[in-house]
Image: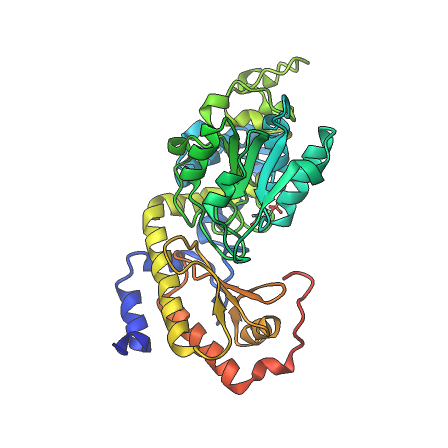
Amino acid sequence: MTEKFTLEYAKTLDQADPLAHYRDEFCLIKDTIYLDGNSLGLLSKRSEQAVEDVMQAWKTRGIDGWTEGEQPWFYLPEKLGELMAPLVGAEPDEVIVTGSTTANLHQLLATFYEPENGKTKIVTDELSFPTDIYALQSQIALKGLDPEEHLIKVKSRDGHTLDEEDIIQAMTEQVAVVVLSGVQYRSGQVLDMEKLTKAAHGRNILIGFDLCHSIGSVPHDLSGWGTDFAFWCTYKHLNGGPGAAGALYVNKRHFGVQPGLSGWFGSDKTRQFDMEHEFVSAGHAGAFQMGTPNLLSMAPLSGSLEIFNEAGLPAVRKKSLELTGYMMDLIGHELAGYGFQVRNPADESRGGHLFIEHPEAARICRALKEERIIPDFRAPNGIRLAPVALYNTFEEVWQTVQKLKKIMDGETYKKFENKRGVVA
Ligand SMILES: *Cc1c(COP(=O)(O)O)cnc(C)c1O
C-alpha cells in the first residue's frame, strides 16, 4: 500500500483526528513546524490568560491577591497539584507544584535517603540526565559517603535503552534508594515503572522516578503502583513555559515523614501564620514546599492543565503513538539509505519523541531550522523529533520527512558546521 505515503493520506488522518481542534488553542509560531515540545512546549492561549489573571490580581488587589479573588495565590500550588494528579495517577494531595526538577530531587533525597545498617547505596543508570546524577552525587557526599562507591549506575546494553532485569539485578541488599527516569531523555524508552516499583519494594528499597519526559505524554499510575516518590518539570510536554515551576509526588504512606529540607510553606496552612518556631507539617505533599511559591512561573499551568484534563491523557497518548508511528513509517520508506538510525524503541515502549542518529546530525538540524522546522539536537549525533498530540498534525509529520529528504538529496546541510550551539 503506497497510498500511506502521500500527502492526501496525511490529510485524511488529520481530518479524522478527534484532538485536531486543540491546535487552535495554541500560539503557533508563524510558518514553522515545531517539533521541540519535549524541550519547551508551546504557549496555549489559556496559559497566556492565566498569567494575565495573576498580573491583574497583583495590579488590582496587591497583597490581598494571596487570599482573595478567583485564584488566591496562597492555595495555587495545592490546586495545581490536584489538577496535575490525574496525569501521574496520584491522589490529589499526593502532588504539589513547587521548586524545579533538580531542587525537588534534592528535597526528596534529603527526605528519603537514609543510609544505615549497610543499606547505603543509590541505584540509577548510566543514561540518566546529568543534573540527576549531580544531585545524587551531592546527596551521597552530604551524608559523608563517597559517591564513587555508593552511586551504582546500571549499564545500558545497547547504549540507548535499559533492560529492567539489569536494574533489578542491581537492587542488592546494600541499596537504600533507586532513582530512574520514567522516559529516557535521549532514546525516549519508557521504563516498566510498575515492575520496577514491585521489585524494589520486594527488596525493601525505596524507589522514585524522574518524570520530566513522561509527564503529559505517557500515562502513569504512581499511587496504584505504590511508587514512593517522583518529581518532574512542567515546561516540556506540559507547556508550563520557560523555567516554569516543577512538581513532585509523595505517596500517602509517607505523609508523616519530616521533610529533609523544611520551610514555612511546607506548614499546615492554618498554622503557617502563627509564626511559631516549631514546624507543623502540612501532612501531605505540600509539606515538601520550602519558601514562597513562584506564582508567575506556575500561573500558565492553570491553563495548560485544564486542556490536558479536558482532552484526557489516554487520547493524548493514543494520538502521540499514531504520530510517532506514522513518522517512523515515513522515515523507513523515504529515508532508507541516507544513514539515519532510529534509536527509540519501535514498539509501544517509546515515549513522545523519536530519537534518530546521523553522523551529520548537528548540521542537519541547522538545515531543518533553515527550512523552519524545529528539531532538537543532542550531542554528539542525535536528533529528537517530537510531534506533539495537542498541537502538531500528521501533515506536519509528512512535510518534515519530505524536507529531510530534500536536505539530504540537495546536501544543503553541508553549508553549516557540524557543531552544536551553546544551548542544544
Ligand atoms: C529536562 C530534564 C531535567 C531538567 O531539570 P531542571 O531542574 O528543570 O533544570 C532534569 N532531568 C531530566 C530527565 C530532564 O529531562
